[in-house]
Image (tube, rainbow, N blue to C red):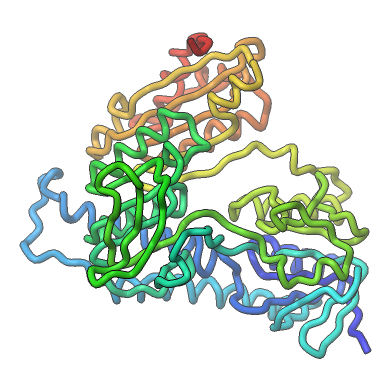
Length: 462
């Protein structure tokens, strides 16, 4: 016998709890299912714990270099890694318990713990319990992808989940993967005091970015003592008496690097392997992501997919926006679409990279007649006052409409300042709205009008 609900939400990541509560408050009897840790990746082993660790790492970094600000720190400064982990664990616990309390305290929401699998298009099984609902919302997220590397099955390695349990300082952390997750961990552990090497198979870090952004990020990390090996074409791993040996190149010396710990940061994969999508008739793409339309509906009537599992975004903010789209369309009579949102994200190294809209590469590929302006952060008063002048600001504008096409802000507070541009982009207003506005001094944002006043034609590549 099945338990019947108006709606079933599978997974308690960023989109699931908000949707379950919203559905319940609209009078729909809702079940939400979680198989492991409430809050999903963001709360447990993603945004919240990593940014908590980054904060501790920054404190260590600033303390070591405090004399640059005229502050003398007594000898013997050290990083207490068990205390760092304990602080992170406390923040994570409070967040996860907050999700549980919220869900269990909401009338109309039934919380079920266990592994959910589809039995049919509108039937879900959790152990011996069978549930039915006309609407099912899949929010099961993703996990770290394990690359095909020779010898990997013979060595101990870490990923973004197991890294959260480390409470000691690695002697030498080798990170395979030079993108967002890998670079944040690399800088973090270098600032804690570890030797760090980043191994990237591509010819540049964070390859989706424009070349000057990738190069500047590399320069920032190398300035802190992080070794970076690009174009690694002969990657293999093995355990030796000295530690974990990672092959980097078959020809160029040094061909290998020996570390005490190995972190894999080579992308993500969706948690659809054991979801029973075939029993429900849910279509997946070639990578295992659930196919959805512009309203996040799957090919099966009444089934939606939100968050990382749908392949339409890989961030907490895209998952939450998925919830907003679905809730608005189902409950508020709106017609919101995934294609309406402007891509935006950040790389939370220090200084951070804030990104919105198109890159220069994308603008060129589309053949748009564009204007571009770039300004080094050393021209920004706030950056000079803080002694943090690394990076630059770059913005792209449509030459005809004067509307902003995209921006890359690599520098102090770039992850916050980017929103001043993003909000104008959503209004479809010309960039002159910003240049005509009065901004507060001394801030980073006040230099954005100055940046825009330097716009010039984007010249064709020679």
